[in-house]
Length: 256
Image 1 (cartoon, rainbow, N blue to C red):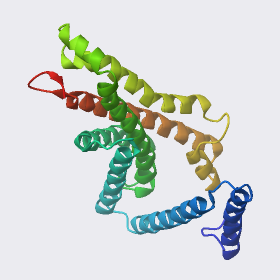
Image 2: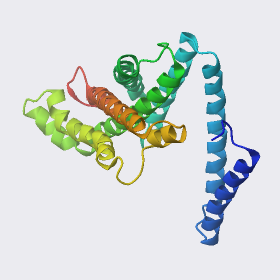
Image 3: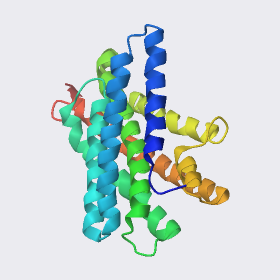
């Protein structure tokens, strides 16, 4: 396989995209423009990301790695906030801290202790691991934060009853925080149970296309999946705990 796609390959790519749009149009689904915009946006985004990563790859250094990982972290925070059905700006500091902690705790041991690149700042190792870990953590943190905030509204009477019986604020919100954490972790758990059964994970597919040995590709995928699970757990826990604190007036010890 060549390093770059030839013009004829791009024609095939365009043909596949047109086939998708054409099938939707033939059935009158009203998704023709949406598909066109989505494909165009994906093309622009991936081209931009590929160009930026090519610059980082060409001149690896601690500074360029820090910029790349910082960009991934910022995008993860924005993504987590946008995934929530309702925007809670007060959750942003918890998202920032939770995703930073999750990314560091999950990525650093994997890269430095297991993968051990020749240069510790090798972006070819840090960036893929960081992207998977932060993406998973952002999704889990968004679910946990949103569900805790919504529970404070939908289960207000239950929480206030617990407070009236002498529970602390964190004891009163604890059942709803646990439910939110379970919801945040279930997608990751399902990913483990279905891995390799119905489809090959993306990291394995990419590694195989790049010529990596199948067993090595699978072992790397499993390693990254475990790291992502840790990141989801840490990020969701921090954000759920922060959301639980934000639901209460710290002085009056009651729901806001």
